[in-house]
Image (cartoon, rainbow, N blue to C red; front, side, top):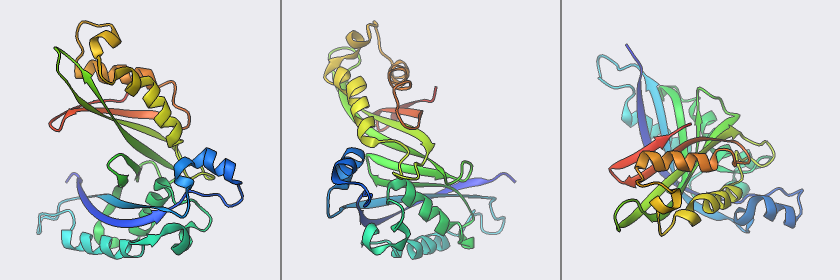
Length: 250
């Protein structure tokens, strides 16, 4: 029987700060930006855990959801409402970035035999940023996804808001704990996408008579793919509405 994927979400809260004590303030600020600001900043994290397995012929389930929720709550209790830098010994020698935190949670959950086989962990800091690690690629690499928005006219004279999700993939830097510099990525996307597209007629910006969602998604990929510094562009998702989105991966 083929394996089935089961996805479970659960929330918790923690605070963290990006800091290398051996660096001076200028270097910390240059590398980590606002994430360096003392004392710390908090997140209402959303953890999405995907497990795989065959459907049990007796229960009809991959894993008992009660058991899965119990294990997740038990693991996250250690981190809930804690300062990851000050309260968690795991981050004594590594920065509690989303990438490093996702890998730590993977290490802990992989020891739990009641939840099946771990397939993917996605750790969302908020609706605009999440990190993802997978069984297939190991814990030295991750993907980071950032959301951006712009309002533009596609056809006619009526504009609407587009939500753009940019996913960068690569090895987790052992020094910074990041796949890519989010500040640099933000500046790139604003320069290449948000600023030229926002409040504009996309037909004029792209010099075409009509702009479909498919065309726009590929055009965004083309504008970004060779300009990413740190990691590689893996995926673009462009959401036109809650019910309609477009994906491109080169």
